[in-house]
Image (cartoon, rainbow, N blue to C red; front, top):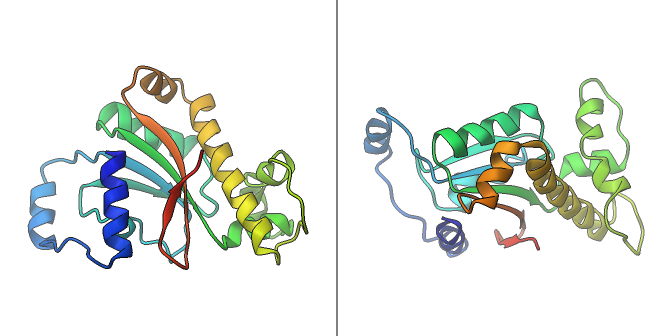
Length: 191
C-alpha cells in the first residue's frame, strides 16, 4: 500500500489525477469501508491529502490536527483503522511552513492553542541538534522542527499503542513518517 500512495503522489505532482465518478463511489462505499491506509496530517488547508496521494472516497482514513501530533483520540482512531478496518499503512505527514510549528517555536500562549502547542514543543526541546538561527523566521529551522515533530509522532504511535506496535512487529502494518513540500507537492519519506 505504501507503494500505491507514493505512485499516487507522483500522479499528483504531474497533475495526472485519476478521474473518479464520485456519485458512484459514494454509493459503493455506503455498505462499508475498507481503506488501506491512515494518514495523520496537519489541519493546514493547503494539503489536500486525498488528492496528494490520488485516492478517492473510501480509499484512506485521514486524521487531521494542527501540528500532526498524536493524542489518545488519534491513537484510538489509528487502532480502529488498522485492527478493525484492516488498514496496512500509518503515515504521519508533516509539511513545510507549518503554522502550528512556528507558533510552538514562538511559544504562543492563547486559549486552547496553548495546550495544543505543548504537544509540539518536544520537537523543539528534545529534537536533534540544529546549527543555525533557532527562530520561526528561519525556514531551515522550521523545516527541521517539522521533521522532528513527525519523527516524534511516529515514535509516539509505537510507544503508546500496544495494538499498533504488535501489528507492526508481526508485519501486518507499516508505520512511516513523511514530509510534504507545499511548494512542489513532493512527499518524501523520513528515515
